[in-house]
Image (cartoon, rainbow, N blue to C red):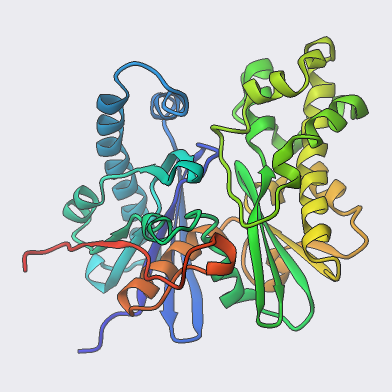
Length: 366
């Protein structure tokens, strides 16, 4: 009996909104979307995860406890996905699960994604592939971003294009024939989310309604864009441990004299401008830009990105819903692991060479 070509990808990103799971049919040279499910994090889980983003007491115990809770949560979204697709767990070759990033410190050679893949395999009865970043880092890489390899597989073009993934952090993949460049270019939604949570009690600024009440403060924008990270040459990666409200205060202490809507509007402009600056600095010949991730649903952010001198659209134009792309990448990475194919791009991560990414947690007894 032939092995199944069905894989599940589970992604919970730096926005801490919940988990997305996709079912994909992965075959040589082709990855096809089948179904999608999303579950929001319960408020208490989101709060506990957010608290782990900064150092605090009893970190190890809290991290261990949360890893167990996350495995249960990932199992729930897996069950919902299987029910939605009318597929049995026995039909799934493997689950590729990223885990929840709480530290990303490539400068110190480590990254931490909360997860309990052994427990997830036990609950679901499906083989689980996890820990995708560590192997790249062991080879001297940044361990991130991982999605450019998938972007190259799915969206390759002879026309120079950029794929922009806007989650908590924004990363770009620059595709030009066989040439692929990719890196984290700075904050995506994270600063905007933190600011609207602090001032409006909302998880995120839906439809940019709060930002639309403000105006861009050029002094603040200039101060933020002067951060050395933006001028660093790739490969490079970053996270919420760098771009947060403490960073905002340090870069521009005067921001507290501005109205909250003006700060929100300026943070949105920071995300858009840092993305466009990064694209055209690294690949000046870019002719088209496609956006995925939660940022693709922000109309004001898309409007500002649309000021680029080239067409800007969501990846839906290329046939993949912008909210499915990143989860599909982890289904594809699981497929690569099972088939002993490299999942990293050394030119993107700075690793010494191609590496098979991930670790296997079998569902059954051997």
